[in-house]
Image 1: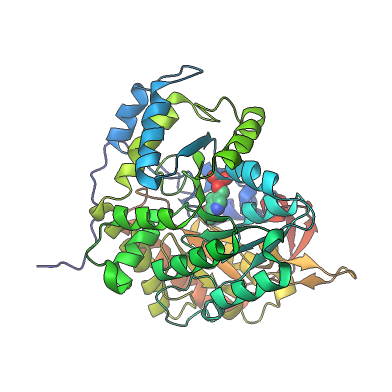
Image 2 (image 1 turned 135 degrees about the horizontal axis):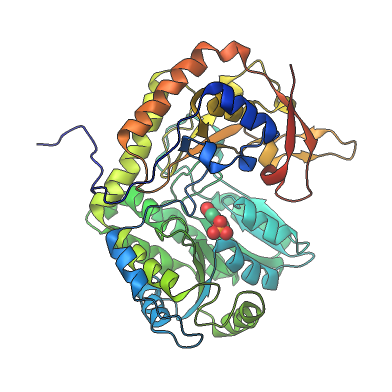
Length: 459
Ligand SMILES: *Cc1c(COP(=O)(O)O)cnc(C)c1O
């Protein structure tokens, strides 16, 4: 008998209380935070869906492994264990530990980047783009055309447009392309999966032209789940085998272990090429640390070694993907416009469609983020024009292609009743839809402005 209820495949051994706040309190907190939820104290948040990054609950096995951490500066046993685990998974010979994903990006793309260099991706994640652009290089996103249609059914909406890839290679010339980066799953494009067929096509085009092919593998296990269930010939392959096959198609990977590593901090860079690995190791020593710990404590490396195994557990992955879909499908049934089909780690809401009365230069996504916090104490993030907007030479906003709001689900943290609460909060937001108001930016930094920008509500 297959039951409908998706039970959490774990018992809870340690609990972390969350403080219940009133709507009036939340109004004050949000005003003090200049309507930027990144500036809120987490103690003032009820359900924190800001990110799935570094927010996982660790297992009893991971907490036990932490006690066996070897904190030696050089040649630590914990490093050997982690290195063996990553090598078994990825089969790349050169492995560099870093304190998180962007440190690996800084090392690799800082080395490969520079003026006139071009990077091509299905979608560059925000830190990826920032680490590329800061070197003076150009980052070009080429998701498949189907990804533009937010509600179009497509099993692999995270795919890269391989036809565009071919024409970009002709346009820019292979020798100017620093790397092609395939992000799995495609985070900024909606947490959407990439098929093995697409990865294979990208791989062979890169090989043909001698272009470096890097996997941004933050959510490779979640991506493997989708391949197993949606791509014809993979239903009899294990999630881990699917991930291993995908690693085999690329020349290396970057991973923020704060996602599918099931840890609170960590990352790594793994490469096939010894020369490139040597250059990156030199940079690693300057910015992160000695190559047998990078930016990590021995105990962090132990927890990550266990997490990289646990994440491929079929019961875990089923619960993970199905519970994200549970939230998305319930919101959709209420008429909330979401990116469909639901991705792996998050539900994305189309704020432009939800608040059609708020123009894009008044940031409908940020308005929804504020309403969710005030009404329900729920924290999430705008991934529209606040995050990706630019200005033209007259200082006019060039909006992002989409005004999305991301509800990211931390791994193994919230139960179905927490999700039922979130769904109920949306009933209220639907009822008061017309009252929602836009915002104006009063302060912004040059890079990654969404983290520290300040806003004013337009009454
Ligand atoms: C989180 C993330 C990164 C950056 O990793 P951090 O650990 O946050 O520095 C890079 N790429 C993708 C797709 C990510 O989701």
